[in-house]
Length: 148
Length: 148
DNA sequence: GTATACTATGTATAAATATTCATTTTGATT
DNA sequence: AATCAAAATGAATATTTATACATAGTATAC
Image 1 (cartoon, rainbow over the protein chains, first blue to last red):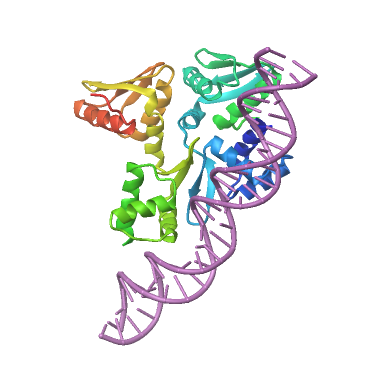
Image 2 (spheres, rainbow over the protein chains, first blue to last red):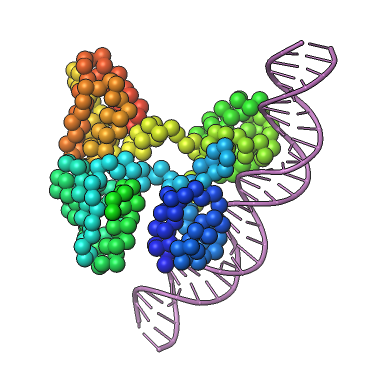
């Protein structure tokens, strides 16, 4: 499944320096996902990953895409992310829930039914448990969540 | 000579969407600079340009430095920037004031006494009017503010 | 159910980019 | 100026990435 794979790709490039599609294919395979270079190429395009050059080799990183960037900027606002049934609950530092909610709505509109933000708590509602798990994963990645 | 050429490359990619080395070679030639693809490849590496993919084609852009990057990324969150006495007021789209405040705090901590963010409004307090004017300018630049 | 469209994927290949190696240019030192 | 070292560059090539085309899967409408 595409979404799983792309989520995995985001995780991988965060974990270790990936220089080529082939390296990514190899890492995906270790995670039990087997695809060809063509598919990885398409995934990279869709995820808008960029290859940042440096003295020794270039590596793929998530593009400082507006929305992604917002997430990274807000990472210090997020305290905790948890899931229950089809819900994902995000606890933030006081006053930041609204900004986090705006970002989540924007980035994951396709996967969520809606979200409600208070002052320091954000509730995200998805269609089912599977979806919620995915969203939880994405939110964690987006906000660079280290907990658990 | 290398410096001229690389400066020209930065100018070119800012002016128009460059998708390939060959396109860049062509533009450089129009500017009276003749080089091969190998050299352009090396220049791109040294300048740390990145190729950002999208639905139709990928283009080269300068990977900007961290702080600038932050501001530019949040530019779409900022609606209005104004000043009164020693205060600068920034109006944002709903929920984004906190994120903008975090960036301003981070980048201009030396010039501001403090900032208070609501949901869509950010108040920046400086020591005096002169300082506020400076900060207003910096904020406008940082968030690529086009108004007024 | 079947037909129709749309999406995802693999294979093969084209296109684009990076690098090796040889050569030239540039700069510093004497 | 002559010499040496380092940097820059081009030509050829290797490597990497993107895509055209064919096929399979998935959903939707009838």
